[in-house]
Image (cartoon, rainbow over all chains, first blue to last red; front, side, top):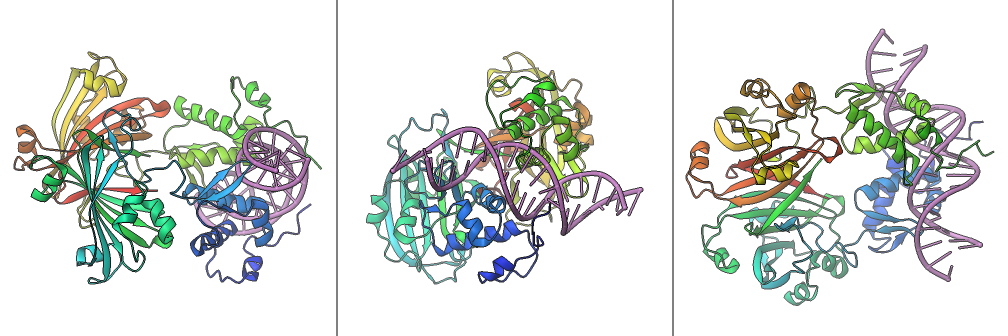
Length: 261
Length: 261
DNA sequence: CAGTGGTCTAGACCACTGG
DNA sequence: CAGTGGTCTAGACCACTGC
């Protein structure tokens, strides 16, 4: 016996809760979009649980299976974490064991946990104005206010990474070197907890370069030592760029590891 | 009314077709495993279609939904490609528009298609014995027969990549420089068509290095030019390593692009 | 024990492809 | 038009969590 089923394209229930859906897309995609909006709006904070599948199904007037498929995709995008028997939680950089969300530099020995946590030295933390090169990837206009941070990460006492960060001034008002130092290591966790900015995705461009004098001195290496330059743009929800980061990695004892599928 | 449903853990139908399933796993995982075995065994060749979901469901005595979930995972792993209205096809490096399956080097201009196809020059193609460094990642013993290939890839006439390949001798008997040259560009397609070896996955280790004299000469660059060293191990089904490749990339006009989720 | 996500089924209908 | 994958539903039961 067929259920009293409305057409799969019927988005009446969705429209009922007040959202326009101009083009066709499967119901579960629309549900995914709605949940995404709630995530962006901060209806559920990182680390908290979202409503159960049954709740959401009732709320959106669809079957549990449809909600499930929507959440499955959000989980695949790392926006949400499912835990059997407990619920579905908004992904977070804090509290989790995901210390280095985007860092792919690994000691050549392979034992990435043995070298222990990184020591971080903040060299500089100042408010400046964006140059054209910095403004473009951050979707700002040159001259806009940006926060610039320069720091060194050391592993086992050896300076290994020299990093420059640029952050949009409007989103990170009041960021201080003290804050950067407090959260030893968990920079993205700090962005979340202190500024409500959750990074979701990143793109990196890698090149091999030679350091200038200042860079060589800071990393305590001879000039002419080839370094891996990693330029990263990190995005929040909505593909909004929120961080530009340029790292210089020593690769004599470490390497950048990547998996291809 | 409940269906005449056997327990979810009942693998009778699976056992019926003659396979042991020692530990517990969801039915769809077991089905995935069975399909995987057929792929490895070559029951369906790359580019061909596999049986329809209904067929497989009948064959394994499970519902279409269960087969679907199994195939969904295989599709997510890039082992299989679904095409609505046509069927599900074994993924292939040939015929597809996926010219460079694993190459992540991109011109800085971003317009990766404008520079046209790479010109390939084979410098060397010989049979040797594996050194310890080569044997380990290929899961061979040092001294085992390996094929070694050295070649240069040029973009727009500029030598950009110097590559050394090592292939297990037993799987690539009779590989010649002519074969390498014939398939301009589509090396992995050749492996598939000529040797029945389909690469499924790869791992890369990146470092910044300086070239030695020979390397600098071959790439027509001054010494002291920093290069990106990319060491890749490519795997077939079953996590069997089948290729070790070491590339030296010029990164003055190109960069290695990576996306992080 | 109740509540959560995870698996499985059966059946209906939609969207796309090709003869 | 028949056959394929894609969506959606409804309902049952399993596995895990925590009270």
